[in-house]
Amino acid sequence: MSDYNFAYLDEQTKRMIRRAILKGLAVPGYQVPFASREMPMPYGWGTGGVQVTAACLTPDDTVKVIDQGADDTTNAVSIRKFFEKTAGVATTTSTAAADLIQTRHRIPEEPLREDQILVYQVPIPEPLRFLEPRETETRKMHSLEEYGLMHVKLYEDIARHGHIATSYAYPVMVEDRYVMDPSPIPKFDNPKLESAAIQLFGAGREQRIYALPPHTRVVSLDFDDHPFDPSRADHPCALCGAEGSYLDEVITDDRGGRMFVCSDTDFCETRRDAAKDEVAA
Amino acid sequence: MQMLQTTDPVEGGFDNIPTQSAHAFRAAMTAMARPGTAHVLSGATAPAPTSPAAATLLMTLLDPETPLFLAPGHDTGALRDWIAFHIGAPLVGPERAVFALGAWDALTPITRFAAGTPEYPDRAATLIVDDAASGWDAAILTGPGILNEAVADLPDIDILARNAALFPLGLDFFFTRGDRVQALPRSIKVRAR
Picture 1 (cartoon, rainbow over the protein chains, first blue to last red):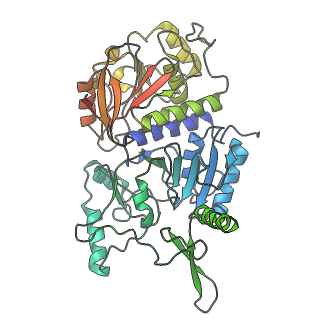
Picture 2 (picture 1 turned 135 degrees about the vertical axis):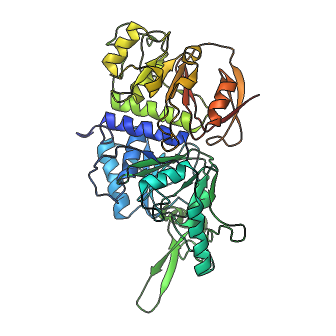
Picture 3 (picture 1 turned 60 degrees about the vertical axis):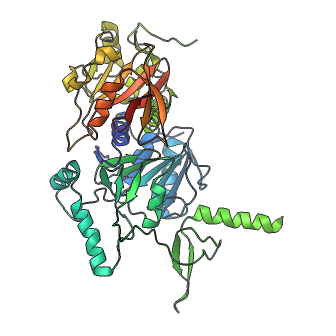
């Protein structure tokens, strides 16, 4: 196969990460500190997700990696190749065919199954960090369940803009206990956090792992008179016609031309292939 | 046929550590993520009375960084030697243990173990309840990892309900028997059926 230990990391590192994952699953939404290793890629490229994936992989797995929904961007291609080389695992771009999906900033459109694992790459795991820079303080706030500051922030959004202007990394409450940063997924994806799959979050630079077991209650923070709204661009996908998927805006010329297309490339291609088959039949 | 128990401290480890521990961890993680479901966990064999599932769990999760408490019954010279050779985990009293191994009665009272601190709830012990006893009570489980309800046989519903009431503090449990493992994290509410 290769001259690497299976999935790159040494066994003792994997055990340390595995113990952190188990504690993360036992306390959903709580950020478990772990001794993040230096990986052969820069921070910000998914070192946390890669370490979590490496600790979870078995040689029988098929891996999918997406970056903003796309299978064919640099980050996704590099990480897929990394695991092909160091773990010898099969890779795929199909959501349905994957056992483990590592994602940067999207949740696949297709609902995940019980036997799948979704691993998130997380830049800043602490939802309170931009409100309170001191780790000692945010840790105390989590322990005391003191989340008033987060509601003040959302309220200030409403006071200033008339609505909650946070559109990604929208904070959620996990099992009525921990406020959690769902990583910078669009808030459109927040309802999909209540999933049948196991969801694991890895922040390499910040050295934190957290987790959501299947069917964990995850509620996006809001107010009675300003309920959570998972907004999306008001267009169908220009390629597949989907009306319920998250869209990217693509600039097509320098005269204001633009189109909206599915951000989830596998979802879009599967739909277009199905439409083609229908025409052929 | 595979040996179920070994007496030689050098025997009973993994043949292929990366692959076998990867499969074992996947089983243990799925058990922890889906309380009430049983998973096959095998590959390692340790001296009696340790079950293959418990031996595999020790091989997969423990190393010289994880202090282990061996409860009476499991605290034998043969198992100490096996752990020293294969794992190297320091053996300690219950108060300092990160993991504990034993039958349920030998592990109680469980209030001896670290349940974490409000700021670091992850600093709580994981108990491997390696118990072949029968006649446990059926309990109804609800909480993260379970869609509606799950049912599991538990050794003492009152004690485990009290542990869950400590959430986010509390102990996490693996129940091993033969080559099967189930888990009960502290986040799960338990009540008698």
